[in-house]
Length: 169
Image (cartoon, rainbow, N blue to C red; front, side, top):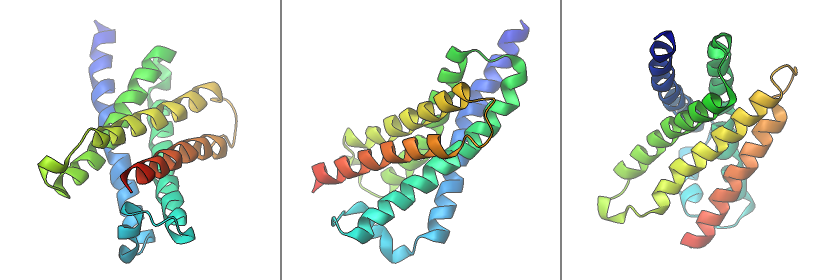
């Protein structure tokens, strides 16, 4: 009984933490990236500036995820969360993050323009969240463990953005 009472709030809060992480990333992107640069992010011109924008956006998003995921997992670590539970919670976290991007993409276009690649957004954020969860689990007792996981997640995110831009251009 106690276990089932714990699971529901954990599942719901994982999604909410992911969504809140996406809000933080969005606010940081609005503050740090000039608004005239955003069209270049969506229509990649393969210039140095557009690549730096893609790197910046990916870094901001993955750093925000890392911050929220590490705090989230720390909050529940005293409840002896298993590896499989961490994986499931990480996937829900990524779903929460990706749902905000998907919602913004939906409202930024007509519904008929939404294609299956939009769902790649959600898949990407689930995948990068799982990368971060794997690092956080593996190196949970290591100090200064943030650089490598953020770098790997950022490179994964950047690869997705570049591939997507290449396919769409």
